[in-house]
Image 1: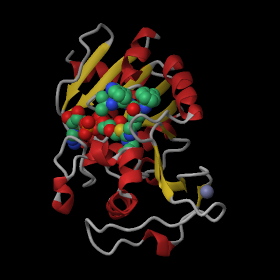
Image 2: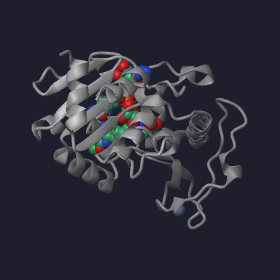
Image 3: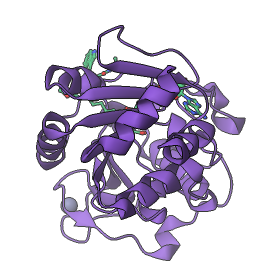
Image 4: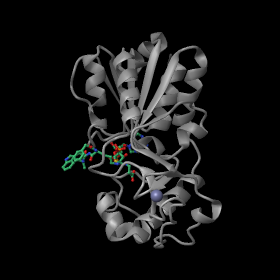
Length: 250
Ligand code: BV8
Ligand code: ZN
């Protein structure tokens, strides 16, 4: 049997499955990955230069505008066949969990429950000064054109600037999210890693942690990202083709 047939057979007999996802699972919904060069007016910026507290301090309107634009991209995107396969698999009596690096809400909109967002979510905002979480009003969410710099709204408690509720580089991951991810990854039979380049730590350590906890790891990626270890399968292809086929075969 080839890797795909083996992987389908393993998935069929799995009781606890964790899907560990990165930007590649949302690519076919039209949301650019980090490896793609930024499009349009943002092409002159490097994402890792925009995704830091320092960038926000230097130019809060630029960073807030960028996240508003990404939130608009997310709202115009739809969950794809890969997101839906994960949600459908959870209806088959298996325990299926999602641990994602993505800040979009496509897993939730596909029907997945209790998604663990290691790097936060575009749906949330908090105060840069006092960290108070804040619901945004529809008016606060409007960005008229791509690349627009928009001064962030102010905190109702301390009048500090609001920031996106996400994890920037050099910021710790939310304690609860990392703890939940570790509990799920250490206890699963199979970890399916979908659409991640494995560059950003500590999230990138998750497949290795699963392998060391005796789980089988199935990678789904258009590139070969395997760690060349036993109990690992590398399925090369787009998430929207590979995941549904993985489920149909099983
Ligand atoms: C931390 C939210 C402790 C924001 C993100 C030096 C100094 C200081 C720190 C560090 C350092 N060196 C390393 C670090 C740690 C750092 C890090 O990893 N840096 C990287 C750049 C090396 N990590 C951190 O800072 C983390 N915190 O460590 O805290 C600490 C505290 C203080 C000081 C030091 C350490 C916090 C990291 C969180 C950053 N926030 N996101 C936002 O989204 O705007 S990261 C962001 O980038 C994503 O969340 C994700 O994690 C990452 C992108 O990775 P992917 O999702 O994998 O996407 P990518 O585009 O890379 O790849 C897409 C893949 O899909 C590709 O493989 C492609 O082939 C594939 N693909 C494409 N299309 C498809 C497909 N596959 C299938 N189907 C398709 N159709
Ligand atoms: Zn505040």
